[in-house]
Length: 253
Image (tube, rainbow, N blue to C red; front, side, top):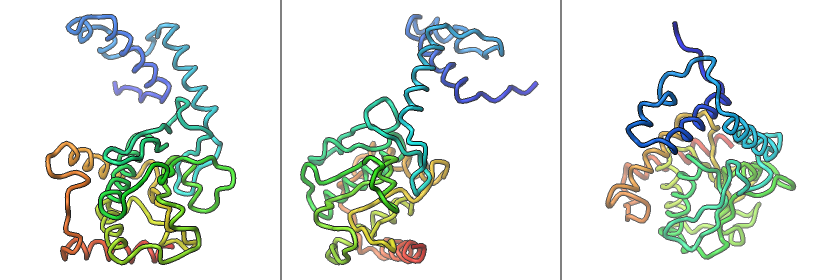
């Protein structure tokens, strides 16, 4: 008989029970314990586990703003409160307090910020803004409230102003966007121009985001392959890919 798919709550309960079992048993016994075996449908999770999951779910529900950002992600009312958005450093830069959505969004956007720092302009503390409360945000800037966007050097690129990048800087930015396979979009291509804004252009269920994030993770663990390694942005294939993506994204505005 095929097994019944787990609900999200069931998955959390099972994960919590497995963690509890592993914490109290030696390694060899933990692997053989019932928590690692097929779970009967009437499995009774310990009361402490059930209550812990209930508290976590209630906390997460309180953080939800009740709406989604322009790119389809759930907006949250606070960061660092046990939800999906937390403060993270950007390795290799002075940016130590970027509030960003954990998981694939963090991997992709942190990589983008690092390349900006290494190849476009050295960043200083406070020059990258991540999660921002929903109130007052308009258009694509609403993506900031879901932790899926960043503003880089907003004082240098005021909303509504074009031409903030020198040609070589813009060429690097286009190369970064192409490297990310178009899962990030630049606000400079939007109808309401915001050259400081960069945001995820795909929703949480788009497989391209997970694929790009995994590729970046592997590269970061490979010597001579991560952010900060010099690339030739004038390479014909890279330029062609960057130009093609720029045309598609501009036409989609």
